[in-house]
Length: 242
Image (cartoon, rainbow, N blue to C red):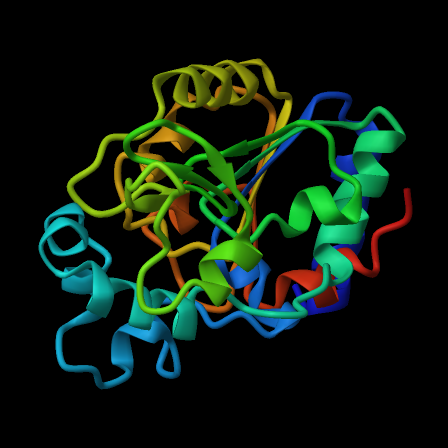
């Protein structure tokens, strides 16, 4: 099957489905100018004083917050990023009553900016930041402008509401994601290598009819999918009619 034939098949699956869930990773936002983590030009292949995996860990944040924030502002706070065709199409599908939830590994808030209402952010969001001492909320502009360290007026250090390595995922968000996926009749997995756990393990809860994977590279679940499209997510979904 060529790509256009696959997209026609995807369209027919979407047309007949009533409870679609979208499970997405970094590849969903690359078309908005936000780098992913594991591709050739992703964050994990750039050079820093420390490996990115080490910098965005809980231990590193607690022991060297200045270096953490230097990396964080440079690479994770992307100014001016806007929703792309994938984000917009998913919001359309939700508004049309076809899509019940977006489950995302991304922390950029672009799904909500595009208009999606039910979004489960497995790894948190750069748009939310809280004082570790008094829990006062701060926005991303505060983090961007508070150099070298964002300190609360109470004297506490402000931490992004982002799940760092060594930290557990939010229980309620995990439970909602499991429920949405287990109740779905169609699951679209896109822009993710499906190697980051426990998030990637959520797709095992799907028992519906149509499992679709849209990703530039192969994934461990390709053999389980009814349809695999190796292309950019936005380019594929932009061709879907709601």
